Length: 142
Image 1 (cartoon, rainbow, N blue to C red):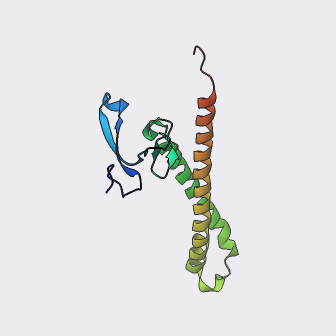
Image 2: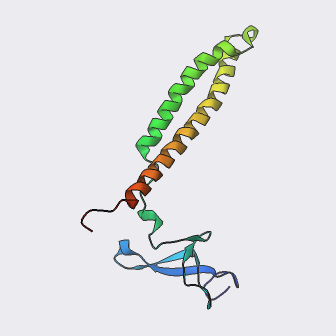
Image 3: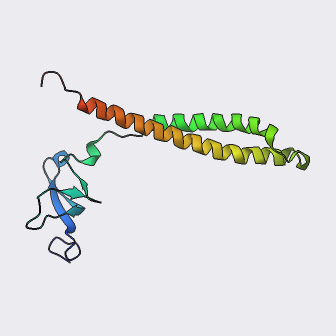
């Protein structure tokens, strides 16, 4: 173990940071890169992503509960609708109504899962772009 608590020569270990949410009390963080002599004194977290000093838990959430519920409801309605549409296209008509319904439901499940992922990714991307656009706008009076 090196002086910082990480592997020898790795520069990774424990680091003490002031926590502004706890009234200036210090907090320990694992995985912070410790600068060695001769290196720039920049601080990186986790996998080497640079930090601008803003804690990640202060960023707004990209996924809300209401957004997730809406995505699930839209996907469920799409599942029911696609099952009805796909029942006409299942080639196992001679096997009975149950086989046709299962075939249509299995296919509809895959399509609904892709729709759910697309809706979720679109919502997260849109939210992140709106947050970045609002952060880039100058605030009046400053």
